[in-house]
Amino acid sequence: MTYSQPSCADIFESGLMSYEDALLRILSSLSAIKGSERLPIERARGRILHKSVISTLEVPSHTNSAVDGYALRASDLSGRDDYRLLIRDVALAGRQFDGVIEKGECLRIMTGAAIPEPLDTVIMQEHVELEDGCIRINHHYRAGKNVRHAGEDIRIGDTVLAAGRVLTPPDIGLLASVGISEIEVKRRLTLAIASTGDEVFAPGQALCPGGLYDSNRYSLIAALDRPDIEIVDLGILPDDVDALLKSFNEAGCYADVIISSGGVSVGEADFTKLALSNSGQVDFWKVAIKPGRPLAFGRIGQAAFFGLPGNPVAVMVTFYFFVLPALEKMLGMVDKPVAPTFKARTTEDLRKVPGRTEIQRAIISRDENGEWIVRTTGKQGSGILRSMSLANAFIVLDHEDAGISAGEMVTVKPFCGMF
Image (cartoon, rainbow, N blue to C red; front, top):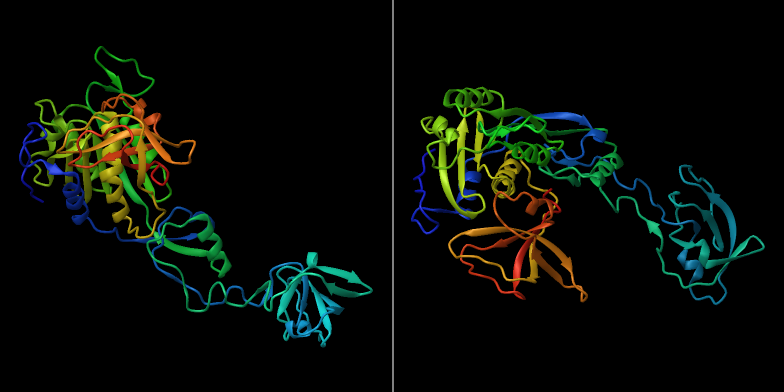
């Protein structure tokens, strides 16, 4: 792919790509992966449904009682002042009742037990009085009350779950309810993850002067610890053009996606860019977003490649706003839990210059009136990872927004549904 390259001037430079345009370009270049596997339903939570599931039976399979009580004909209670019915027999869940209930009689019935015809109403046991083997009804009734009809949940031929759905615990129970023990799901997406830089050290190692511990790879691995993704940890790659390209090319032979952090800006020591700039398959963009301005995207071998910034907050922001939507498209995800976005009132002034989308780390809560309010976590530098750890939401300030005054409404995106 070939796109014009923005220069590395300030945010007002011509050619700086908007957040929306960058995301659109990424998504439009990707397609869903091929391949699936069959799993027992108890291992399928969090996986992506490969094909729609069509029911071959009705749920419930028989008309049954929703409560413990007494089944009767509603017509037996019509036009009478004294509702007194003889208890003829008992119906238990899981057992077929073959008796006959005559007019003026009722059937003691347990929750889930089949309701024999012509009985059509169940009165809760708390709403009757027992008297000499009979019931006396002392509560209002409605014909058809407390009856669960065959097929009222699912009918034969209904689509139980649609392809592309992220399977949730209720979905697993739903599959079991229609007799399905195994399900076909999308195969797992294979991701290779690397950090780059001679100054980067793994936790537990001794730091050299000017060194820093690698948090980016650990944040990404934690963010991607989910059932539909397989992670290959490439470790920390050195500032060596040949070594970087070798590692990326090898990963491009087996991975669906490669994610690296660091070395994608415009400096002479940005070795990831130097290693990939001649490949003809990876573009380096300047995106009008803060944090996360430098971004590389393209393809290495069979893998989509994302080169994220080096600063730890910029890595997290670009992951959630660019990489995660791309992964969801590659997984064929079309029906997933909603990550809500809504308005909240800021309790402080928010500094912002127009010309870029700005993602600030924030804490949302409710005030004494129940209104959503939001405040930042403090200093918003792209290297301050604590600003992410303290937060429970993003504040999303649009491209053309200027400074926001305390008391104004802003867009917030809670971490729930994302993390």
